[in-house]
Length: 381
Image (cartoon, rainbow, N blue to C red):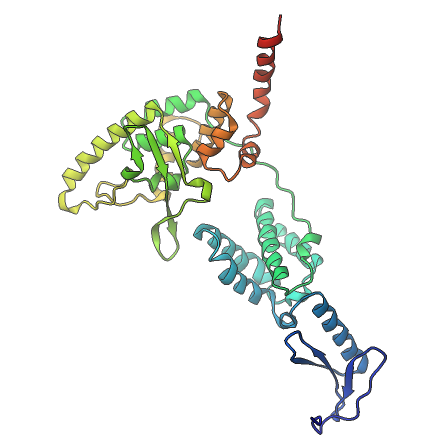
């Protein structure tokens, strides 16, 4: 089929492929795509269009899509969040990723072409974020989000390499874990014996359950006869939705826990107190079968319970810790008492025993003396 009249006779350099000059003076190159179609490239000079052709041929050789040439970082991140992140992670994780992209990444490098993003660009981003006052931990989170996003771009053949591999995020010092001693934990439970949330605090300290798992607990998850509890959901606040029940954090978070006598006693007393509230509420009671709820049977807000916990601590006079640190206190007590780390890992619902060992590595050195004492008991004179 004859070429349109705007073109002149082809002029080809050695190994340059299909390059010719139009009557309007612009140089043109054509590259064949894997689909069989052709992509047309334009330039003001032969050298410019030749370089564009070589770049396109290199990208095709590397398995990349030429459609990514004009795609900006902002456009890609938007597609990545909706197509890859939202369907595969928990809502809370998605909102965290989306927030970092929207507030930290896109305003600074969002206009850059995805294929032109370099390690130097990312290093400059991290430096700018640090200078703006963000903590090293937050900047490190930005690096992790970008590394995951650009790793997906690599798998989608939009880029040839992940520029995050050549950039270095700031080091994050491990924060010292704040936990109560066994004596402090015992004093806290003793001082809250008559508190309406006493059973909640007992379960947090004796099972290591996450706050959302505790607030999502239902009576049908409990078997007070056998003394066991099943973790099958969590309660969390979701933007635009409100309080919602969700699947546990990971597959291993769905687990069965054996309850201590202390926990069973507290739960029975809590059930009696709840029965009184249900009878007093009458028809206004909302029966959702929740173990921990307000006086009308409605779910408790995690934020409000965190604030209530802080007020109780202040009144008792113990060192201030987060609600989540009750989970850490539980794990620390168990490990320091010689409970096998595998059992502790399963009880906490960790994804792997490695996570447990890494999180509670501060307990391990204290156990070395126990190991030496065990050997002395066998071989000592």
